[in-house]
Image (cartoon, rainbow, N blue to C red; front, side):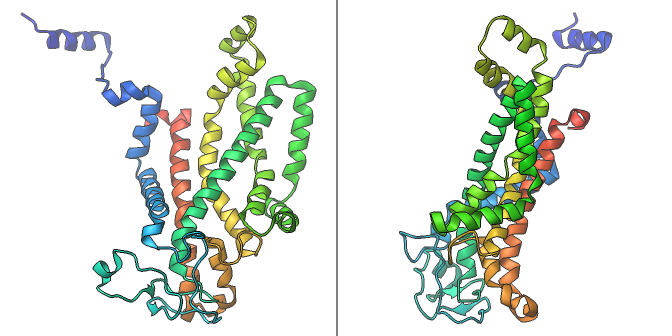
Length: 346
């Protein structure tokens, strides 16, 4: 007698159909999310990016343990060891206002004296503390700007594409006007105008980047919605008399948003790079605020003598480089996974 397995094999051979066992995770997530997740964890480049992102997340979450703040009420203020303009190399001992020792310090090093692990910048700002707490600044700035610009771009682009006609022409011409401004110069100018009004902090730079950062998302979502809104399920919803707002936000945007999300994931790194550039120019964070761009700003006078003061540029620059690289690697992998031409390769 032929058993069940043999019958299944004969059926697969006869009809040319192969069956695949669906696991619990795929059944719970669904086929498309499972394919994306599987592609991310099997792609060497995306794995590298995810490992780097996890590393920065752990650093940001564990900042109070890794680098205990001198003032718990203002932990983002970088402690300084005096006011000398000459940077000090890694391993230099603290001379004044030493931060509290973390619980792991004596166990790891066997010493009771806290040192400048990565040296000091000009003005004796501790580089190690600035990099650790600057990770929190990078995530905070990146998430705020991404969420705000994505929401603004989605709203403007969706309304423009859905209603079309005069509404589309007016909104797109306004978008074109914003896009004519060089991004960094426009953000720098607006930050300079807002700083005396709001005060020197990270807020003016965040607002400036949001104001001049939404246009790409608006144009991208507009193009996708123009194709999605002509599909049968949208026409059926209109025929049933469903309101425009419900059709747009319930049916159209969820089916057109994926390319925009891919671009947003890649922009997480470039946004932090732009914010660091503003800080480097003295517009971003307040003096002594834990930010990678400001650490590079402290190193400006010593860039010509990197043979002796290499650490003032290397460590902050490496942090920015790895952070941007991580998001770019993950963003590239996600883009490939959503590309229909490459689906057969994932």
